[in-house]
Image (cartoon, helix red, strand yellow):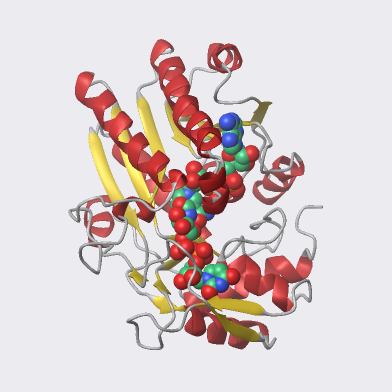
Length: 337
Ligand code: NAD
Ligand code: WQD
């Protein structure tokens, strides 16, 4: 199949492009490079031994999208493009709604006009808010998001569902990612955040490499076994493979489907630190800090639906996730710079 990948030079997108190329799909990537580097294209091509088309294009640019879609008859779109920094979204909500929501509406109109009505969307466990049940199944009601980024995902799920309800030619797969970490086992691709990392694993790896003095642990008084927050971390390569399975579902005209992509196992912040130390051999100094606004105690998935219906199951455990995050960071202390 020929797949349009938006945001395909970003962290999860680039790992997914590797998996798509590895199994013989043709890939067209668009990315506005707001949070990625052009050299990722060369690395992906080097790792896979295959070429793909890349356009520097913004999903809000209808003319640009039309040019790409005129040049390539694509069968499906995997839509990663979006802004994702939670704190920034609180400070600049309109930037997030414009980029993520207006951008996606524009993309959907362009796809529809070119008769491509198949889309896989990067959603997030954040749509569950403070979840009503643990582990979280897809039946768990969506909740109150604590920031505009989260609301943009929740609203986009609604927009995509409404689009499919109005026109049954659409096939829409909403993938709710839990906490993606890890990197390509080659050590040549990984997460490359700008500035101070917001997320746990990139912060830990930057402490390990000596860029930051110590990790701040945001709260140790949650109702969890050791008091620190519990999350369902998932290896980015497993996550990428989930998109391949979603593509199989799309090609069988699945209609509208929602899947959690997680491992089903939660780890606390301190457990992640311990596992990272074991995998890397590097000690991570940390300090207990106050809770971070908007954080919840516990979030982990019930991934049974994806296993049963997509035949997808995460294969890597926390050790491999830590090992590959460290492999990437230690081989590339400055990321893609
Ligand atoms: P990322 O920032 O590495 O990748 C997103 C890519 O989209 C970047 O390359 C960026 O340049 C591009 N982009 C952003 N706005 C664009 C626009 N208007 N037009 C064209 N390109 C644009 O992020 P990621 O971690 O790879 O996340 C991919 C998707 O998955 C995002 O939609 C994100 O919200 C979602 N998601 C991420 C996580 C996570 O923890 N990383 C969790 C759940 C969901
Ligand atoms: C994990 C745990 C923190 C940093 C976020 C988004 C979510 C999704 C994934 C996109 C928590 C603790 C963290 C640090 C810490 N993204 N922590 N010190 O908050 O579960 O999810 O990324 O969709 O929408 O909200 O991930 O990695 O930020 O935090 O103690 O320096 O680590 O409190 O318990 P989170 P995270």
